Length: 285
Image (cartoon, rainbow, N blue to C red; front, side, top):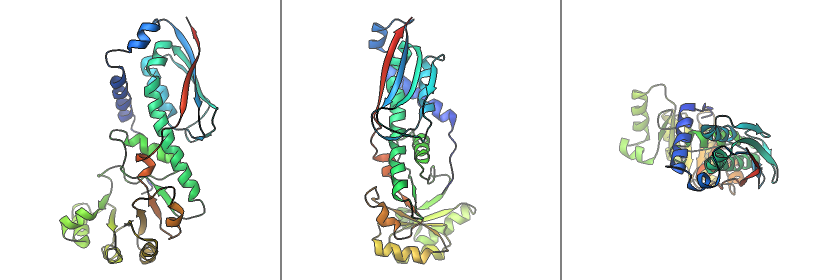
């Protein structure tokens, strides 16, 4: 549940190449017509709001894909708090590369910074509680590694990366298996060492999951009083995770139940892109 996922550089490189190809296609019509290939430029990124920066190494790589000789100076590190009007990075190199790569680089950083900013807010709201905030698998297809890295950068925890690193028994699995006990038994027979979490909506299901010896119990869309009872039942036997329509507005109420984790898909599926502006300060030969 608390595993820190290492960034897979091969996947990230693929994502960057694919994103540039998607945007550039047969060529940047506007830039190639206006800017000669030998022109150089000095540019900078300015933050237009307060928040948490994330993805700067990704942005540097994007620009260097089009100009390996880009000179990059970062005034921030991933995870740093930044304020509106502050300079994030400055860089210089081929002017065509700087203009053509702008949107792709910003798309990565604005999304990742938006996730990190929203996660940091959630972490701050939970300060003083034992409850920790986690992400889910509700990420942009192909960008899960970066989405989850951004959650880490904001101070949150990662849930499972995919279907392969933890067993999650959800309502439809329970139906397919014939019950919680049967589902857990099938998983343990096939993968005896894997950690298992079961989604529950009633106290009876919580009790059955505990009797089956699961590691984590998800309390899905439970009312506060029922959740408190479920947390009490699970105490010392399994870790608990609250889930279902959880967001910044109700995190503290849920944390007061004593639940170990809150998982929120909103950390990655309902974020606002962080506002950053690229500006060119000089063009030269």
